[in-house]
Image 1 (cartoon, rainbow, N blue to C red):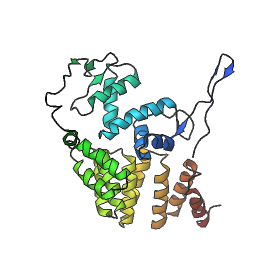
Image 2: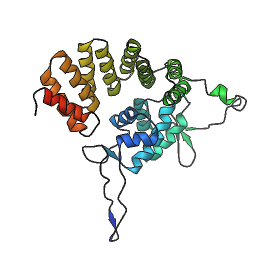
Image 3: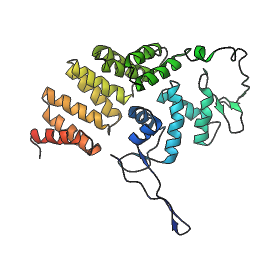
Image 4: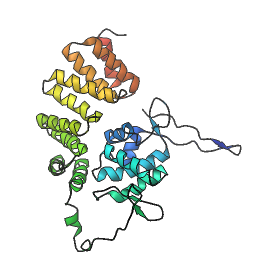
Length: 298
């Protein structure tokens, strides 16, 4: 649901233009990333909603999100960004500058922070001298673009966005080296799109193994387990997603549907009501209201 824009402060007796706020979905669209990625950033405290029960974000949050986007494209997970940002603030006090300075770490094995005056620092405060590699110019861009799992991850993201799901699968499979739950998650989504349910479940399980607080992976794992006939496993996974993110509307919906199948109508009604409280204007809301009515609720 798109919330109403907030009002800006009054300065010098005259009204300013209303401050523009963005919903999570709008923020994701503006950054060109899936909504679950932005939700991960919010859950890890990388983005802070500004107000209200419906999460809304300011222009500053949009700028932060666009910086986070560069890390995500390089294959950085939300926990990795969070840890790095926390450490970077030990040498750069301003939070936004510390995050932007961390961009110097992309492609490197250790965390570094670029300060406003151009210095390159480690979180200990040790200054580094970053001379370009002697052979960097000699290597072609095509060679450099295929070197790391992070590069393959970005190739997969681009292929998936273009609808080339099988190409995305091949790229994500090459991106699985290292601890990257996003690669497992995206690969699971691609397998699911290709109706390879068992392989999708394996990847969602791997994502939760790398990042036990990955609510979206638990949600998708619950969906796939249910479709594979593992109803108890589906309920367990969806409950785990909601333990991590209690306002996760989609997980409430999926858990309600699963509980209805196994005959727990009281539980199903509880989670359908929760879904409506968090997402009352979605395209599924009327269907949920009909579900409640057909199961004895007015």
